[in-house]
Amino acid sequence: MNILIADDEFSSRLLLEDILSPLGDCKIVENGREVVETVTAFFDQGKHFDLICLDIMMPEMNGQEALNEIRRLEKEGGVASQDEAVVIMITALNSLQTVVDSFEGGGCSAYLTKPVTKKALMDKLKNYGLV
Image (cartoon, rainbow, N blue to C red; front, side):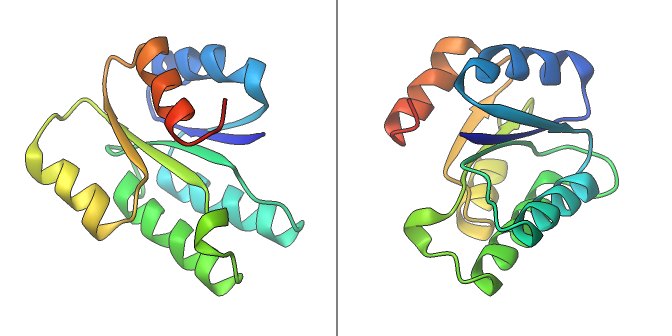
């Protein structure tokens, strides 16, 4: 499985990598701009990400903006909706508006609040048939 982890906090990246690295190849970035660059580079190589863990609050481009770009790239690349990356938005903000914006505005698959636990993340992955 190709996995992209995007978070500006080192400890969060390390935790997600520790949980997810046994499941596949993890690429790690620190901001939304790097997310879009990495997804674009993968598409250019004829590859795609199966799972993207995307922090909402990041510098240069936030997670919601990055998600909009990911979905645009998938659409332009002819990726069928059933083959789109599973995108789990992760944030310390537990506000209803953030959740609504992530699902309705950006097309995220799931939502987790920090601190992320292995059980919560694995439950989400099971829901999407990734484990």
